[in-house]
Amino acid sequence: MLQRAREAGVEKIYLPNIDLESIPQVHALSDAHPDFCIPMMGLHPCDVKENYEEVLAIMRPMFMERKYAAVGEIGIDLYWDKTTLPLQIEAFKKQISWAKELDLPIVIHARESFNEIFEVMDELNDEKLRGVFHCFTGTIDQAKKIIEYGDFMMGIGGVLTYEKSGLDKVVNEIPLEYLVLETDSPFLTPKPFRGKRNESAYVKHVALKLAEILQLPIEEIERITTNNARRLFYEK
Ligand SMILES: [Zn+2]
Image (cartoon, rainbow, N blue to C red; front, side, top):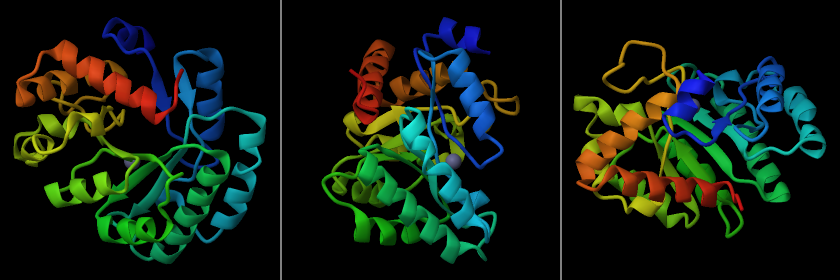
């Protein structure tokens, strides 16, 4: 899979963390391929349970032992479980405070939760906070609100290639400096591989679709979105 990603022109793969169990996998993959697979650390909103404070207390010291590209994935998910919303909000806020302390970007997971996320962001956003709304599938108004936060981008994935998503109209209204490309592997596989397991190499098909929608050369899309990703993660 990594080989196919390299052949497709992928230079770096950012690995979001999910919960405590995923940490050894994220570390093992990034240790084996340190310049290619870049780890993040965070507690995913779908895995915020009653014990979230203990989990966060285990994760926080890890930032002192290892370099992470971002605090992520964090955010709010009301598709899978609405009952944990108050806990999800607290875990999200706590991890935003880490990002500020550590000067790291945040990678936000938002599913059926834009209003709740915007409420937290309106309260906590400042000049220091930066990041990305990953797998953005929102409206033009939601995109505009994200842009107003100042230092936030939108991650575009395979959904862009789905005819009924309506995302084509939205990306047409967003300046290209605010977009980064992603896969969300193994989910949200772009066409023509929809229905199969997603993998990093397929980000190419997201780029091709964006080039088609914006009527720009693919090289231009690759250059600008790659620069955006570098800016997002402050790579030199
Ligand atoms: Zn996500």
